[in-house]
Structure formats: C-alpha cells, structure tokens
Length: 477
Image (tube, rainbow, N blue to C red; front, side, top):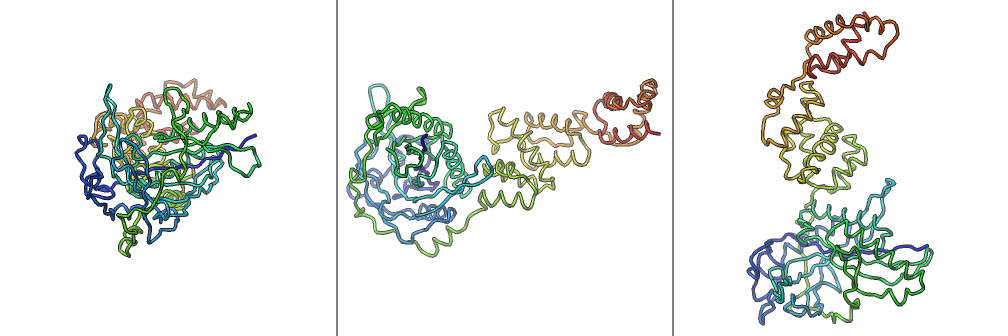
C-alpha cells in the first residue's frame, strides 16, 4: 500500500492596474507588445520600482490565511533562459518572502476540516508569451512583468480530492479578497502539482515529480490520478528508480497522460542572488491598515449562515464556494425571503436553469431582487410553487419584466378565496356522489381523487392548501 504526497504551487495574477515593476498596464488581450517599456523589455537603463498595490494585495492574502506578513522582504534574481524572458532572469522572492507560514482549511466529505499549511506566498514578475504560427515563432511581451503571487503549500495533501478542495478554497479566497479575478481560462490562476508516493508508514518522501501549468480543477485531478498510477506501477514492477525521476512533466489533455518536459532544476541551477536594482521592500503602517481591510471570507460566511440563518452545512458550503452566489443569496435575504426557501430556489431552480444554459450566476437574466420577489409571491399565496417555476422559465427568456405582470399574463394567479374554491368543490362532490359515499364508508384513498379533480377544474389556480382543508371540511360534515 502506498501513500500519495501532494504539494501545490499556485500562481495567482494580481489584479493591479499596472505591472509589478513599471507603469505599463496589465490589461488582457491587447495588441501584441503594446503594453511594454524599457523596464519590462529589460533594456539597458530600465530600472524596476515595486508596485505598492501588488504588495498590499499580497499582504491582505497573508492576513486572510493567518500567515506571518513580513514588514521587510527582499527580491532575488532567478536565472533561466527562455525566449519569453528578455532579461534571462525572473525577479522573485526566495530568501525572504512577503508572506510566510500560513494555513488554509479544506472541507472533507465526512464533514470535518483539514489544515493545509502554506509555506509562503511571494511576489514575482510573470514572463511573456510565445506564439507559434506555422514555421515562425513570435514573442508577445505584454504579459512580461505582470505581478504574480506564487502560493506554495506544504506537502500536506494525500489525494486528488484534497488537492482540488484546497485549490477551490484558495480560488474562492483570492476572489473574495478581490486581489485577482482568478480566471483560469486566461491563466490568472494556474498551478504546478508536485506528486510523489511512498510506502505506507515510511517517513521519507519519495521522488517528487512536478506537473506544470494546469489551469483546470478537473485536469488537476486527472493529472494526479495518472501520475500516482504511473509511479505505483513503476514501484511494483521494480523499475521505480529508473522510471521515476525528479523532473518536470506536462499534462497532455488530448492523451490524458503526463509527459516528460525536462529534468527538474535545483535552486543552484537558477543561480539565485539578491537583485541589485531593488532595495528591500519595507511596508508602512498605511499599507498595513489598507491590507487589513477585507470582506467576510468563506469560512466566516458558512458559520454565520448556519448560526444565524439556520442553513445546513452542505448548503452553506455550496453557496459560499462562489462569491457572486453568496452575494446573490444575501440580496435575496434582504427582500425578506426565508433563508431555507431562498436556498432551494437559488441552488436548485435558478442554478439548474443557468447550468443548462451555460450561464454564470453573475450574468443571470434573473437578478436577486426579482427572484426574491418571486419567492415572496409563493409565500403570500399569490402563485403556487408549480406556477412560480413557469414564471421563472419565462423570466429566463425575458429579462427585466415585472413578476406580477408575468403572473397575470400567464394566468398563474392562485385562487385563495374560500367561496370560489368551495363552489368548485361542491360541484365536484355533487358529480361524484358515489365516490363520496365510498370515501365516507372508509375508502379514504379517494381523497386524492377529489383533490385532483378540484385542481383540474380550477386549471391549477386553486391554492392546494386551501383545497385540502376545505375538502376535509366538506367530506367530514
């Protein structure tokens, strides 16, 4: 039996207006090489100056994960030679990062939490982008110098499920903090996965393999599963030392396999040394005060939803996993909707329709106030639950329409007047006198027949609760 050991290095692109060491904008999808200057092009005489906003955002993350935020941190040069790095080195933080020794708690399937240690989170500049067109290769340096925060975990995860749970929690955290859009498709949130195995009970780690630049939770899970299986088979076949090397691999989506890219470099291979152009970064009290301004984070929201709103733990986790969903839910509650009812209509009814249409909740054609008003109309018996679903279907296709107007237009207004419902019931009972006698003779299952006939005669508009109560009153009189 083997134990899997997983550590993650997550690169988060900070949503600053300008790059880490110059005033060039960080906007996405601009014309190639438009957002460049002598500093990010590494031209002679172009000197770096640290972006204060990037430092504050990194500090805010540190405070959010109970880390030590260093009031003085340093920058180092990491040497490597790639076409998309004009300086032939990356400015990063090795010897003393701005954030060290934090923690994040993930939720396990059995309802417990597990602590995942965070070794450090450091600032560094991103590289450019290589583009290959036929026989030609080009370099776009718009991204060169974009501020990254690399978050390095301890090797505390023991399965792909734990790794994905950690990534999702981390993704939600940086989004709540509004320090990154964490758009995985655009590369704003990507990770390197370090995987090794060892026989159960062994303390020493096995040979670590790094899988580079994965930008999907699903691909992370698949890459780990494949790599663990590859290493286990090599161990069992007696070829572990020959087949499993400390190396960098990539995840081939088309083939569903990891493939070797290059041997894994050690720190000495990068020839780290203190950057001579950058003095130590010393934070001010003003920066500390700014960094400490943060929103309510997922764990705190979950506890509040459970304690104050009476929501069960699972539903609270679902809602808080996405900040837009949490804010949507809270706006519904502000409309006076009962929390548990809001959960049902948000997570089951609305999200079901949005997922089917491939729409994210932040782009929902039905806003929170509108859905809250619809749920209120169910509570005050204006419309039935079934009718409300028809209204919601209509709203998905017709944005910004008034709820009451839709209910009237579709003829879904619920009849709650006792006299009107009794008139229908009396007619049904008169037309089915034989069944009334059978019911009174003990055949109580016929009650469902009378309910169905009444609802049919009212074309579904009668209040079901009223129908049941009034039928019992008539049949038992």
